[in-house]
Length: 153
Image (cartoon, rainbow, N blue to C red; front, side, top):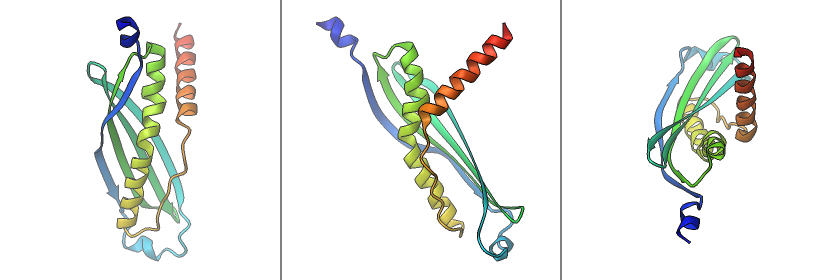
């Protein structure tokens, strides 16, 4: 019975926090007079995970959004949304998916809200990021790593 209990998978969110946030609006106030707001928006998403203690992992979801209007940078906002997660009983191959896809998926709504709030406080229209399929991103990253490992050998 104790073997079964120790092999049981456990997941818990211990803390969700902003590790870093920044916003730049280098062309304000002139950018507000550039005509109708139709920005060119570029979104970059990165994730990182590291062990914080036994069965405890910090996952950081970094989202960088750059908006350009008429070729000029309207704003650049970056949020590093982090979380402290307790994971135990997961096999190594499953732990990677939890840290690389599931945990970032938990963090995304918090990062999305922080970005929207920062952009609004900078005087721009609300920016709502579209949902992200972190499973697909994780699988794509795994395939790229496998291809690079194949090339290296």
